[in-house]
Length: 159
Image (cartoon, rainbow, N blue to C red):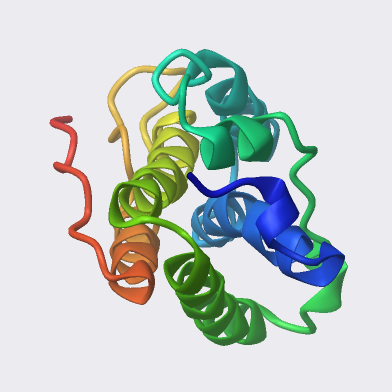
């Protein structure tokens, strides 16, 4: 079983960054709802503790404070390109040290953070009526995240 101790400080920082970076990529894909989306991302960490109980790597990850500095990216294009590359590197790092089931749990969690960020704020509509649960831009960003980490995107929500 893989633990936090299997990573040096820089590596662990990268592992912790992955899910938050996925959420940031989705949040930055479309305007509006940033606060709701950020809250949804944070709640994901708390709400999924039970799902990953017994997996030492994921328990350590869920107990770590997720951090990504959006100002380290100079433009949305740099965020998208560098973010995808960093996600690929983060997953490769976990792949090198973790068991296949731990790697799969890490990928699932990254996607879940992105999915919940995407679904946190309805796009379009007027005064909360109408609109779509996930915008095209957010869905595209979520597909990019899935591709970067070598996973299938989650099912697209209706409405």
